[in-house]
Length: 416
Image (cartoon, rainbow, N blue to C red; front, side):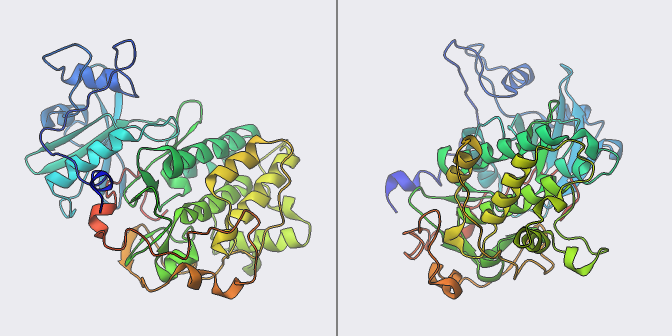
């Protein structure tokens, strides 16, 4: 591996100090001021340390009291806290069973510092003391999207303009991860419970516990570790371990359909044809009745935008991987008033109805890009065939543990 590329994975692990300066010499990035108040650097007033002492976090969370427990993710519990300056925080404690050592923990903290976007949850600080490993994030009173979207009493808070803006924000966040961040990142667990909402109900993508890092010229990787959530996972990944940015695109498509319909993607206690939201939406689309999936709580939905989002969701969930738009094309679609959407192909249904939860499981890594779309070999991609999908991944010899980010910041029940 070239030295420049290798530097994407390996960092010098001395003391983990985050230095942020804006052009005027002040602190930049969300939460920088809070970090400075916790531990100011000796030299210069505009530098701050990411490290937060354990007693400070214990005091902020009332000794990690159950009364402050926000939820439990795949990597440990999350607690609400209040810092001495009054700022509300969420403290993620990595479970003692986590495979991460201190070196890997510090490396990943440094990585998260490089990922800064208004539609991603920002890191405020960390603690690595007495065997404990903790991450500190801003606290969001509105919680996660699923707590509002799937709650009949609260879903009315999300009128159509808010839902549409949430979709736009998710597109921007994923576009940044896939194409604009310092390192190419595939989230692998895009779902409603991993989208936090700020005071203005703007979305923040959270929980990078399953995220996978890619070299810039890598189109895909075949992996033995299958990580994701039941109902959201792209079949080519769930069944064959074929991972690419289109994996996130598929999950995003499912989430868009959930936002439009106000229902979960798999519902057991309904008519058989309505159990799987993706399959049911496809059926209605084929019959020219797409708007029937609209959330009944929406009083005055913008039907043209709703139709656009429904068709876009189906395009993102197509069975042929190369036919799915990338996030750049998705952004263009939603930013243009004159973009004519093609008719989506058959959605990828198989492989989504097993017990896939937020965890890691053994999977086959034998599939290639050709195999992922072999049943539709004669189909021409509407968005242009991905010419890189058949070449061997340059990450073939990169160990999984070196190329995945295993820091989870889920604020809600696992697998929800």
